[in-house]
Length: 106
Image (cartoon, rainbow, N blue to C red; front, side, top):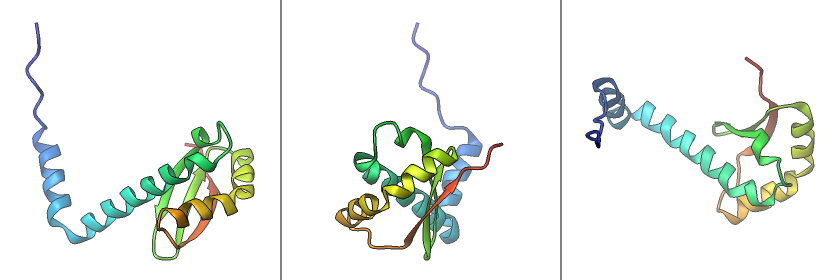
């Protein structure tokens, strides 16, 4: 027996409506999407297995941050900065500066 398709909840619809109508929230969502797109663009130039230890971090006018799961991944990522910057440039992203941080443990 197939269940009927689920409809988005009222709160999900309210959130989507807020994102569509609020200029600040729409800008935040655009930055989140661009940060994810940048990460997707650089995965191919990273050593095998390193991408699994990374997360796209904040993007603002001055920096884009990559978050590494641990210090070893951050150190290896710092060695890859020239390749990362070349991949970003090939994708049409020229700036902002790249920063690498170890993701805080929760």
